[in-house]
Image (cartoon, rainbow, N blue to C red; front, side):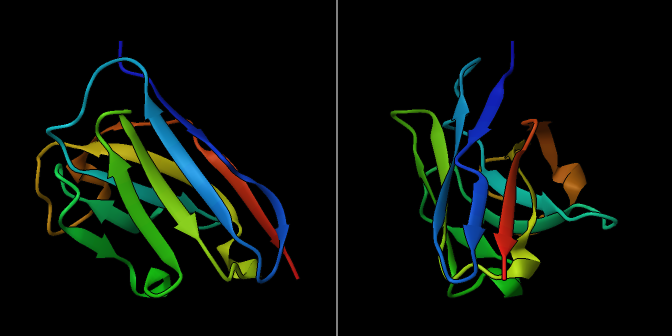
Length: 125
């Protein structure tokens, strides 16, 4: 059974850092690209960052460049999102997902096959 479990969210102050983790406990997705999306209150879910199956190709939304870093450890079936210099506008539920392919250059939601339930990040000013 597919199960993606996000962790690492919480309440922090502006300027702080967090590292989100997404563990695949149901099956191995080492051959698939994986990504992080987020959804703020009243907004649609948006792409944050993505990583190819081998970790060599990284993709970021413009707002994420320079502050957020995606990585993966296939030996641990885990993908990470390091978030630095957090801002109040980063407040959202963050979801990880598994893509249909090993390499994805465009990241609409429908390229994702499986989703976790999300982890809430709240950044206070």
